[in-house]
Amino acid sequence: MPKKTLKIVVEGGNAKPGPPLGPTLSQYKLNVGEVVKKINEVTAQFKGMSVPVTIEIDTDTKNFEVSVGIPTTTSLLLRKAGAQEPSGDPMHKKIGNISMEDVLDVAITKKPSLTAKTLKSAVKSILGTAYTIGLTVDGKSPKDLVKEVEEGKYDNLLSKYEEKWESS
Image (cartoon, rainbow, N blue to C red):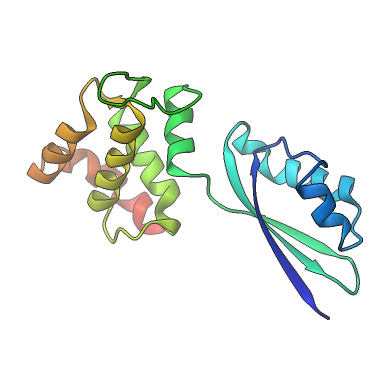
């Protein structure tokens, strides 16, 4: 029962049977339309975001399983801000503003793929990404907020999310 694993990145809910996905699936003699339909079903909640997908294929039976990874931090932040793409010039061009609660939500969502051991360090990491793509947080530069997080100014808010962090 040889297994083959394919790792791809698709737009959530919008995978297409064309290249490169279609030809890759065809070489394993899979029904491309069926696989694409399944990918779109399991990624629908991430519509418009880049999502990593893993397809496990049993090459003997032609059975497959699709599992979805966590979208990139950038994709999650852009969605929270209602923006389409990063600024390209984050120093001079801001693309949106999000709340500190949004940052905490993204940190909790990304916990399985972060190396951060604490919620506080995860928040600082997410703030760093927000800064590099041109977002402000609560109307301030994320760089300034990193300092405020280190100084303990957000400890009360962080403590409200600590339980979610521990259970995720």
